[in-house]
Image 1 (cartoon, rainbow, N blue to C red):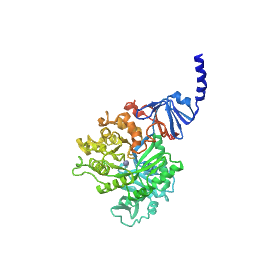
Image 2: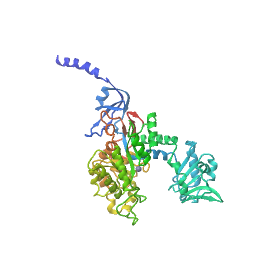
Image 3: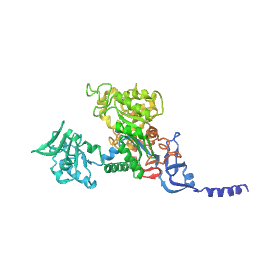
Image 4: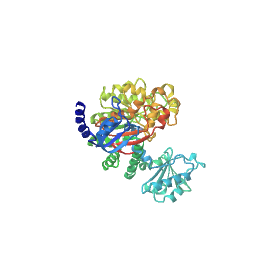
Length: 542
Ligand SMILES: [Zn+2]
């Protein structure tokens, strides 16, 4: 009697239980890397109203939930949505609104590419291009705008040379800025042929048009943000930390998110300028569902490639030159005090060892000891071993871009010499001192692909597998730490860890589906890895 009795009791119970819970989405047949503290791996999860309800074994989740949508991951890996910890989201999108003229072989090819671009990007706004280099053309002649005028009699066109120090414009562009072709431009040149302006501008004459690059109109910015979003979703990114935006752009991002067209999460660092800081002093931080603003982006020095990074001792390949400090110590201290007073996070671009030391000291003076303000050093590219403990002493997060290591690798040693190069791009050393690193790409300086961040961090190799054995492999991150750096550590660095960065009940269902298990691949396997689906708040966006 006993077994029958038990069955009778169980039967209605099981029937009542079968799919008695509602979900919007069930993801199953997956290897779900939750990235929680214990590193738990699940097979399935249920999502409702954009949040994770439950994770568990395949059968349990499928039996329990009736879902509007099911995603069969076909045994692939599901990660918390990848976050780019430092990039220029708008800048990347704006670049996409310009004709790419790099690698052109003649002025004629420049005109062809410009005309083709204009067909897919109709006016009435400016037509901008960038990247030509007459030294790569057969005749090596400076261009003349005659043909440009006949192709574009009305629409203003400006095509910058690869270095930005020269540009060619059409007559409509000169009219649009009211350029007086008879006037002298101090520190610049307006080229003429037989008394007629050719439209070629050199040095400061290009700056007359600076406003055009700086102030894209709203329609262009909207298109830029949407184009950037599409590429980022395809690459598996669900949040971008834009390293320096003005209040106008931040307001536009907010409007586009409220309209529902911009679904990307944005952690917007406010560009260090008086107008921007005054605005946020007045209006306070922003903590929307997809937009967070509570940090300031500051520049301490320049870049290593152009010898602008501020070093303690001269460049190995330029005696007597130590680089550039972009503002006074007093200015950095003033911004630090402002950030303390307004509860903002301070994120400073520091490449050289001297810039890093300077800002670690400035931070230390206001932060004193350990704290939960999570101030960041962006790049932390060359850090003296003696200064490294300062990160932990003041709880400062190193925000680094592994692709820089592999992109700069071929020439960085010449700039720094053998001793300093050993402490450059030292991501594992930094991780060990502070306990975490935030990972990003700095796109569009580098590509947007977070999987390249993974490859550069773990295998220390470019997409083409350079160098063999990896660049300074002692500073490689473990696969698990690289993934943490792309997810939960980036969430911590942006104060979003309660909502993002790991897959746990109650958190947002931001997911990146990758065609293989990144913790089990070798370098060749990592090169073949692809993102196959991206979800934000449980909504499939790629
Ligand atoms: Zn940057």
